[in-house]
Length: 522
Image (cartoon, rainbow, N blue to C red):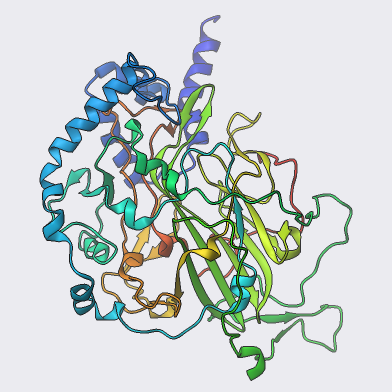
């Protein structure tokens, strides 16, 4: 009897704790993939411990620092030397790819001939109000992985399909990524040529560090629980798309006025786009372009998506062990405008992100201020600690007022018409959201007048921008209670639910009118 209770506790923890901590849906297909992943380990006891106790790759556990010390400072560092040898072997294996680089590179002129949709001059200016209210991003002062240029990122990538390298006749570029969509219903990834644990320079992108700002005189956002009156909205600007136009909200107790009445269409003066003339502060420039995507939802609603790319996501540590690393990292915020007036903003955080009314967030002049977490680059409305998933602050993001990045100074700008997509192709991601795919370019993305020659086909790439989750046989990989050391890289901007009605990607979107300084984990 004495042994029965502890044994029951162990069995219960081994059976249900991994399910509780694993944020992904466990459908039959994902369970089958998981069985294959566990079977990849060459060690019997490792496989059994993984299946019965959710302790996978215990013999792989080791430190995973953000940066490695220089070889000249610590010549006897066995970890660094081992990673260097592994990196060198990878370069030898990929020497043939590097030798084909010159032959695979096409001239700008020939690119235009092969891609006529990319040379069209789209004379649509980014509206002034979008730039006037563009976000400013406080990167963490101790960040080690800075903003990256997607052009440079893919230069260090090869293509894999279901963990197997694909031999291509030409090197991948922003002009031909979409061609990889022919491997539909299979896992297509851009895989790092070098071992990321050797911490190559391109992974850190130190050259893209923004010019730091002085501490701005920012407006203080209202705090949660400040005793303000309950907010109400005049219409449904927070839940709209072209099939669901804005409706005016009136007090249902007033029987003389309908509860929902269509919002009058804006007049010609309201529809007129103001010529681009906003000039942001010259500080905060980064060599890494952000990506701006403008989506017209009808009824005078424009969503401005700002995407930020990093070559590496450094996971957070729990009890000294790091979880959630992945190559490639797409983060974004979205500002929703109604007839040119900002109404709300969405931040991509963990657990689905958070939406705020415009007046709730901190501003520098007319521009909202975002705080990017160290390593994960998740976006928050306040500096400080931000616990998530686990209680007792075991897992948390940290933000502060580090270098301030102004994405309005350097970006790829596009307009997106989601009604031109082909609805027959869908992709279901790990979060359970089914997204529209596309095998052929239907011109749903068009470049803005500020960059009329910007390539568009890369936006339709259905694969992942970083390595597929490493197998259990890989010495870099472990998994404890459903949390991986390395996970699969993310999908691109198109697959962030750009056609969403609400501010959040998911339908259960809660709009906050005050920020929560406590950062409660639930």
